[in-house]
Structure formats: structure tokens, C-alpha cells
Length: 105
Figure 1 (cartoon, rainbow, N blue to C red):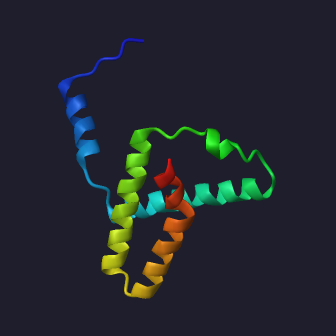
Figure 2 (figure 1 turned 90 degrees about the vertical axis):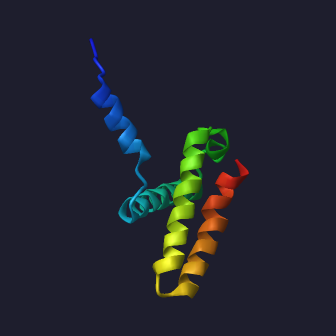
Figure 3 (figure 1 turned 30 degrees about the horizontal axis):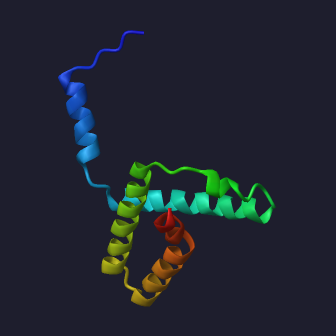
């Protein structure tokens, strides 16, 4: 299988990765993270392999993405959501229940 890469392909790839995520993209990422969390909690509650979480290695790039996206999303929510108290509470809960795991990795 002969694959050819030209300058336009490289330029397109670089452009795609240099763009900041939109609010919608950040919200979608947050939604996906919540779904993953729900699945994880469901598997723990049903007594599935509890060591699975500890044996999973997360690439540094993925950790960096998680931290960047959560920072960006929480900042946008704080800046634009009208119910400041609810936002602060939600951010605190998410930090305690989700981000705490990633910070410890």
C-alpha cells in the first residue's frame, strides 16, 4: 500500500491541530468524559475488575488534553453561565470526583 504525503497534507494536519476548540467541541468532550465516568461507576458498582482503573496507563498527551479542556470549559462556564453558585458547585464536584483522579496520576 503506497501512501503519498504532500505539503498540502502536512499543512492541513498542522492547521487542524493548531485550532482552539470551540465551546461546542469542549462541551462534547465534557459529555464524552461524563459518559466514560458513568460507565466506570456502573462497572465498579456491578463488582467488575476493581484493579482495572489502576492498571490503565494514560499517555501524557491525553492527560495534557484533559487538563487543558477542563480548564478551558470551567473558565467558560464561570465567565458566561448566569448561575454562578451552581457553576462553582458543579466545578467543585467534578474536580473532586473526576479531575482528582487525573491529578494523582
